Image 1 (cartoon, rainbow, N blue to C red):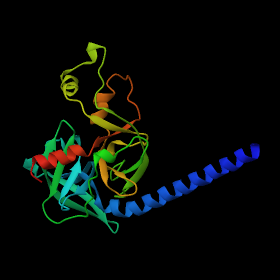
Image 2: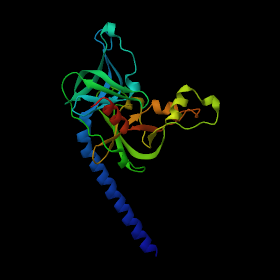
Image 3: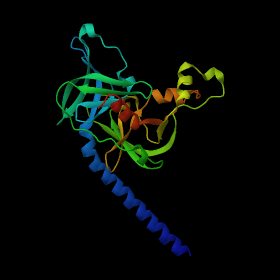
Image 4: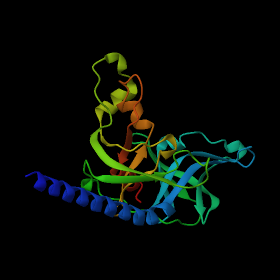
Length: 256
């Protein structure tokens, strides 16, 4: 009996090793498709000491001219008098490049924004189907967790979706309620909770299937936590993502 148990354990360990190796290999191949579509998002002001300012991450979709990011990433008011502009930052063959873009659509409720290149196109990612998303399934996200401090080198994290839950949780203490929370309680929607750690610069990163590279969500490090964790005295290290259906709805509302 003991011998059979050892054999079974050995087989399970071998199978787990094979599965992990296959997933790692799949992700390595997927990254070749994903990384050319990842951009830094920020502003450019020629008369500023620091001309380029990084605000978050974005990713290319559609015809190669549209960039998805979080609405809070591009919420600041531009200094038009000094010719400040929205910009994305890319690196081709380790050669950093700035590209001017314009903000063309915003969905504040779901914290989604669409930028558009004024010229040229970039490799685009495909949007996945929300119905295929499962708790416990492995996904990855790629972005710039600490901005451009160490250069334009996209960083990848992976983890499972540990829960699919409402963006706002009802509170029993009325002192915790404010107008913003009440509005979201009226029309809540689900978000993905991940067991991988993202950082502020990851806001706007694509959450994608490690095998197909299809995007199923947008990493959100600020907007969701303000609502979902308002009952906590200290914010948690949990990472969330907005389902990609809200990006699709925003595109459809503009006829794109």
